[in-house]
Image (cartoon, rainbow, N blue to C red; front, top):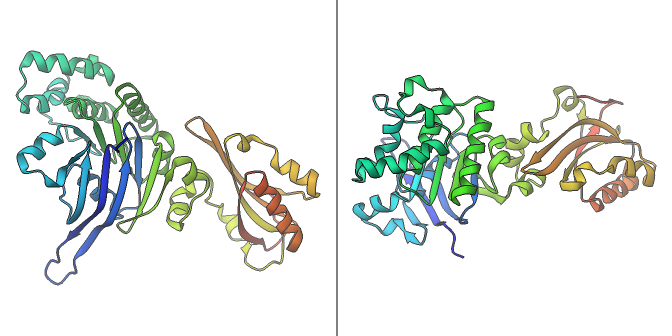
Length: 354
């Protein structure tokens, strides 16, 4: 089946201004996003992720390459046909972009009014949408009377008003507190399941990716540096950028007291980072290492979490062996489906650090 969204060697360059050099915001990026998928794009500020999402609906025109949505090459359309094609692509924003002088109902109705629908047709579409996003009792309220989460729900309903096949979310939860963020992500997941809509999530927070996405692209300096399932990215990150973004969420960020004791010189116990996923996250691997190899590993730091319904975990352990014995311990762990990353050595006999 053809993908819902396809980017083919898409680049976006901004021309030089006065004495400054030209800026390449996105460089020859190719990407396929499947129908019905929740796809994440993550990167640091300035990495190019917001440019990428604006290229999908051609709010920014690419300097080169093609953008295809539901089989239609958007880059080949004139302005009239592009406007029509954009009705199939809804978008929600970080700061909601609601009209303060319009009620909740009328904010959601706006794209339908612009499309020329009658008031009766508008009501038949807006009413069930407000029920879907949990705002059936807020129809006549104004944005100033709503919480941040409620405002974003209005934005979601408005984006769905034209019955799009694609929903673009540009940092849609970064202005919200953690509890409201979870609520909005749950709503998006529910919309994806009920309507089969393809959702693209742009964010700088790995927690958002973990909560909702099926696959994720990591973008850095205008290039996609990693692309995989969320489970693969969390348990087997391939780039330093990805590891840095994962650090807080996955338990990769070492406590300062532990990081200060790490050394590259083998003058103490070896320190290993172990990554587990699925059923392996709950297996007694450390006990098996002790039983099978007589190695008593000390747990220095760790975290167990979940991606959708699958567990994953990270442990940092010290093992009081080196040379062949250390190599054998690592082989044993890898045979137990554990991803092993040597971090160095403890400068002294440090015990558990939380």
